[in-house]
Image 1: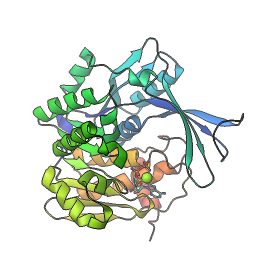
Image 2: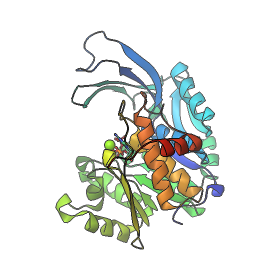
Image 3: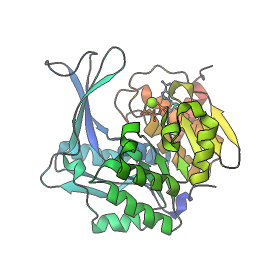
Length: 326
Ligand code: ATP
Ligand code: MG
């Protein structure tokens, strides 16, 4: 078993908490008045932990929101879904972070973000944060946040403390080549890969994380990563499904479920939240792969980044009722 059991303490997610406001029509950006829908609870680390809690895994969040309705919406939502919110700071001055999103007809997205200049960027290592970290059993890390000066020192400190008490770490590399080319970021990122028990890359990230080009092939990239620390690697392949690889050579694949994609945002985070919760609750790799795939697929059928996150019962029903892509 590569991840610490649920009983050791909650899975901890650190980072941005936002609301998302979505244009209801496809087109370019926001330079004209147009119909919008939202606010929806959002922020990649928050989506992950919401799905983890909804699944029934022990879950907690460290982040910051403003003293406003957008902040309350997020905190209430996480609480409802079973997430410990004692590590969420309410900033008395800055507003909750926002993301306005509009899809173009080719599926690409235009954003207007107010993220690190909002309350989301006002994280601090408070007494409440320390108390929470000291009873957490697992840390989930978004790779991109290691480039974010207001967040990475908290992640590093939490990682050391959680590892020291026998906890485990998962890393969603979420990393672009350009980011990794920065020497300081690259070093921090490598250290986190070394500390991780589980990696959850998607697309080309397995190669970027391994420091190889795609021509090297998936097997060499995986081998190189296994040499550096993690015992379990799951490749997320979008509508092509997901594959798991273990250091001892075992592997399995779960074909994607056949669904109509309404809003692709949050699939990877829901996959991760359900996968980590399932593993920590003692389920097998292949069971976790099925729950992760179901969580990712179910979430893309509903508008809003975490509106489709499912409970374990809902995911069981989804698995029973939904055909797989062939
Ligand atoms: P994101 O696209 O949110 O950044 P990601 O790239 O990290 O996420 P994806 O591979 O897109 O991760 O999605 C995670 C998992 O969710 C997939 O492995 C798959 O099982 C499921 N999934 C995602 N999109 C679809 C889809 N359109 N149809 C069916 N399943 C999907
Ligand atoms: Mg994707």
